[in-house]
Length: 397
Ligand code: AMP
Image (cartoon, rainbow, N blue to C red; front, side, top):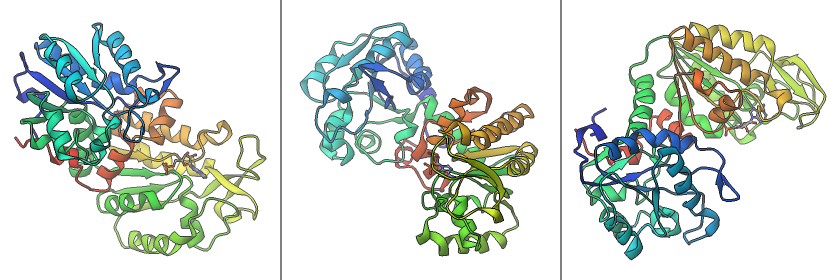
């Protein structure tokens, strides 16, 4: 990576302004999943242990540009205090007198969390004077919020014009190293597995990855648009009719590439979209009118898994079926297990954020693959080959 990192700067007695992604679920004032906080602890601990003053800033939810108690980061300050074992102070606004006073009261080794950035509409508007005000709170800027790096907001992009150096934190570095190496310099064979609901959300990923991988596997709901484009009966399965021509052109483009391309050969169909629906395993050519494909079938699991365990680099984005319903979670679970086997064989296995991360966590296998990305949208845009504004804005080495 040609960007400066937190290891390249002196932190002692500095006000270190850190953009973290603390957009965590909160119920009744209590954080219910601390993963994102835990993932940023190495960066925060580094600052504190070197005698820097960590000033953390984040967004939480979509408060529509004005203060809303429902989206306050106060419960996150409590959780972060528990996890760090020191009091994380809290400022009830991210700019203005309140924030300035809170920053001025910090001693070396202290930690402060600023209130939700999105209580100000200027954050998402990437407003210059707002970015300047945020920047005035720190001497050094660290971006550890990979999950927000695909957005050019004041705290991720605009701010870097007013505070230098702007460096990557450890989580940001980890994400970029895993995803970057997979795309730029993968150990081969390199396999990508794409799933999830819609082709439309993954077109750019398919187009970018078909030039990089040795094997491309497509499962999940998006496969049915391809089946329909191939002329199969797909019943009530998820199909984007406005994307059929596109699916046809992707199919013919892939055929011209020297890569292996796998679609499901069988599936689990249901007579209704619910966990207790009647279900049957059928070949793709046998999907019945009125029924819908909600998972990949056993023959497909075998086919995909054989390919996965032979690979040395694997990127997975999107579930193979409706994994939220236990009766249609088998395909996604089995593919997750194949990734775990591949990891044990020495492969680098990367799971994109969002639903795939939720799925692998549901099966308790998230610690058994090389890397689970913390950023759904950001990892998707990275896989599309796009430059993430929050990364581009960091200071070059
Ligand atoms: P995405 O956000 O595009 O990655 O899609 C994730 C969603 O796709 C999950 O909520 C899954 O339940 C859903 N999904 C996966 N396979 C299917 C399918 N065969 N039919 C309908 N939805 C599906």
